[in-house]
Length: 107
View 1 (cartoon, helix red, strand yellow):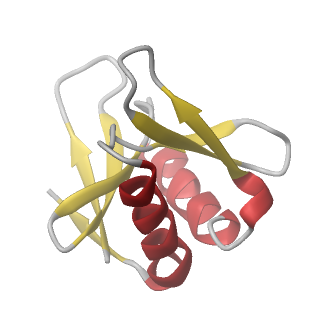
View 2 (spheres, one colour):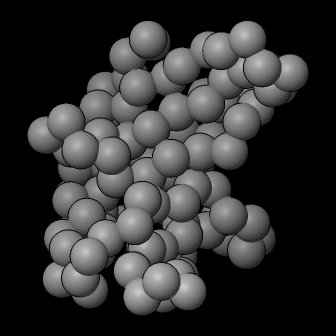
């Protein structure tokens, strides 16, 4: 698993995506400063092993996703949409097992 940190031309240019085997597992909001994006990555690594930090959701179109939350209840990251609950759970399992040791790359 790796984390890809990106910088764009946006007003809040920094964002990241946790990826497993080339597939997006979790993405961030946009951050104004790089250090805040790095803090977000560290928060994911710290919280991703805790089952209580996952908020399982179903979108209005019937697809499945999850939010990962910090101890204070703030959303750290949001997953993409998955076709099935099993696919969503597989992404959570991957994040829980590989997220804490994910390497960071800058794109």
